[in-house]
Length: 392
Image (tube, rainbow, N blue to C red; front, side, top):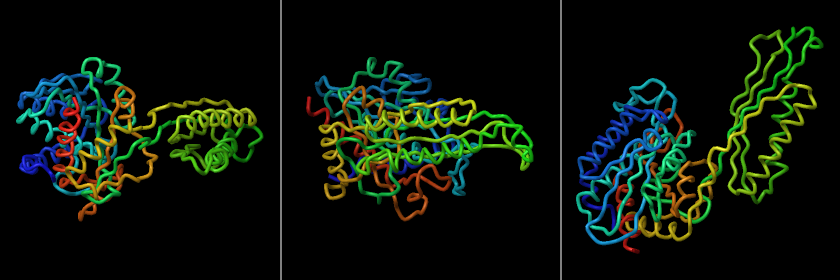
């Protein structure tokens, strides 16, 4: 069974929605326009709408025409990234320093397409919860919705999410049991010494040597303190110090991230990270201000739901197009918080096509979502509903 004909008929309409969202991006917890459009469309299709979960989140509730007591949650993220767009096509961002560089405009559109089709037919037992989530990009909007009672107000037996994958060709899909994406930590290391003239370093306390030693030591967390059979990443993305060529800085600041796939690896590296930073700062006599934030847990698919998702995907793209052996990725996803509340699966949809923008990595100023993926994603969501709720 390929993409649904009724979904194919919505392709042009969905493309218009997606490009409108792309042209008007809103960053985390500011998705007022986007969530307003989502809510209005759901209401126009006769879907019960609840606004304001996690500040700007929206949940649509649709009950089928056939008896059933099971419920499924389908989630899409709505937020954009705080970065400028480098594309020059007609639907490029009209908002300075905001861009849909991760495809959330497409995820929102695919869930809307599935919602419109399911609302028109209602040919399923039980209930569908359409979850439109804010602030996925590092701001834990999923956790905000959970804390606002997402799964107590809208109990779901299972929950599913989709994400585009520019490294895989259009028409291929990756779904697997177990860990799909990594846990994500962010850190800020601030080292405070005493400034002095560069010609008289003995009159100050230079924090740069300490910072350099910490930077080098952090690389050993993976190369020497983690098994080669495990996976972990420690990256420093920012290193700031000084304002003059001839003055020793008062403060050095480093910012970065730690990614791990296993909870035990996370806990061990977190403790070692703190030990290295604190002891090195103490040895150099500089004052330390350390922030270490555990942002996302790992995204872990439950086996039964991963298997059901593979069946639903096979209905759309064929079993031969499913990549069940894709290695776990070191990217992170706050959908993990929803998987802590209900069993489910996170599915990666290949989107690389002839247009170079569709194979550009996410979080890049020249990325764009592939509109040819819209019917595949929306049809997959419909098939998930049909298969999951039929089990009741």
